[in-house]
Length: 200
Image (tube, rainbow, N blue to C red):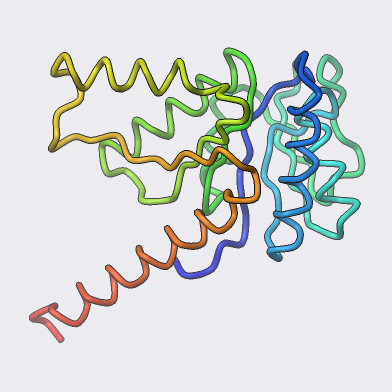
């Protein structure tokens, strides 16, 4: 994977109490579009979800929203999305978001955001994929989770041979460069593996 075509963003359907969260969502939306990547997200127009989607769209980027039918009115699906996919359940939503994305970013959010993020961290840990997963730790929002992961390591529940691999961006401007650097490393690693393939 040398080119990041679609970035999946997990974030809250509320804007949060700190205005920095809204500014960060706008900045990330502009950065995704400026990088020539499209957005894959949960399809709603409320909160940070809607802010990211509207900003990517307004900046000329492609927006793919994937929303379960039961949430289409509650989260007010984003009708201006270039592609809006209404699915029957949450499992289908998460599977399609994974399949369509080349990278994952977690902005601040609630339980749903945390659940989606942890699922991707688990799949990376189990070598189910090598797509980059970035925590946008704006204002230290994800610090309690990072402390919990360290606590798990210190107590032997995350072993060195089963490490959880992720990036932490304290500034939103670092997110896309980190994603692109991760993709470049993966591409270089695969090239080396091919060069040493005895079948070649």
